[in-house]
Amino acid sequence: MPRVKVPRKSTAIDMTAMCDVAFLLLTFFILTAKPKVEDPVPIDTPASTSQVLLPESDIATITVGGKNKVFFGVEGFEVRKQLLMRMGEKYKTTFTQPEVNKFSVMPNIGVPMAQVKQYLALDGSQMKEFKAPGIPTDSVSNELFNWIHEARIVTKNISGKELRITIKGDSQEEYPTIQRIIAILQKQEVNKFSLITSLRGK
Amino acid sequence: MAELDTSGGGKKKGGKVRSKKQSTRVDLTAMVDLAFLLVTFFMLTTTLSKAKAMDLAMPDKEDDQKVEEPIAASRTLTVLLGNDNKLEWFIGVPTEPLSAPAVDGYGKDGFRKVLIEQSKKIKQSTGKDMFVIIKPSDKSVYKNMIDVIDELNITNNKSYAIVDITPVEIDLLKREKIY
Figure 1 (spheres, each protein chain N blue to C red):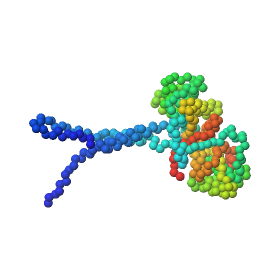
Figure 2 (cartoon, rainbow over the protein chains, first blue to last red):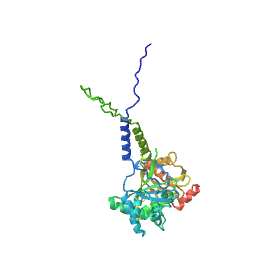
Figure 3 (cartoon, one colour):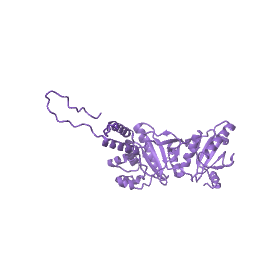
């Protein structure tokens, strides 16, 4: 019986289309991507059904976690630079240009003013291992108040908009810490702020 | 597609003998591999879902002294947040509550039911919306506060305030052993 011979085709596949798609996706991701901001302490944000998105700029984050430690971060390089200089003036510390530059790329600060200079002198790996004590929030040296206050002034000067303050708290954080932060915000008449939450179904 | 015309350029009379051209086809597999590797990397390292925020407006501290329109005790529901993910709620003032203080949990079967029932009741009896006062105690955690505000948002109760707890209310929590 004569068998119908199926002509064998070459197994080489034209990859051009696939390559196009892959690079298209790649380009899309690179352009839309914003690197994850590392939290200074592991934070498990409580879930809520709120769908409000956070704005990209003019935003400051107060991070609370790791046994009542408070960290402060503000968006924007220029804002951070000026913020550090102003804080330096306030606490009678002068920062050198390299120190200011280094500060401008840090998403969070969590050390008392007296230690900021020391902290900025650390190099990358040391900084990672450094156990930040958090910003003091007690009434004796209320540094968080000044950080927020100066950041608001700087933002207003640069972009002309009000700084939006968000609180990112760990779900197991004790309420008194949060209460203290809200009190600090209210002291400077910030009565509207956002609480960062993760999304959950109803 | 990725090939060029590599035919020998036709046969010309008396043409020279040309060496056969190599195919210009490039193997793109490696390039595709690399591209997908990078795509995967970017997908994993970026936050696709941005953080959600919950807006919170606190009453103005300065305005506290000014006497605002008092809210009738009959339509205020006070929530005390205790430890161990428990809350206690009552209507009216703590010294003479209009409903017996009850302990409840958070979430769908706990506080949400209370909110829906009570807001209906209050709406019927007073004709006005319920006002919720949230009083987190020192023993409660941040999540409890978020949960309560979230339940209020879900049940569409727009009027609420977060207020500091008073000693009388702490005693109430202590009585229920959730402080």
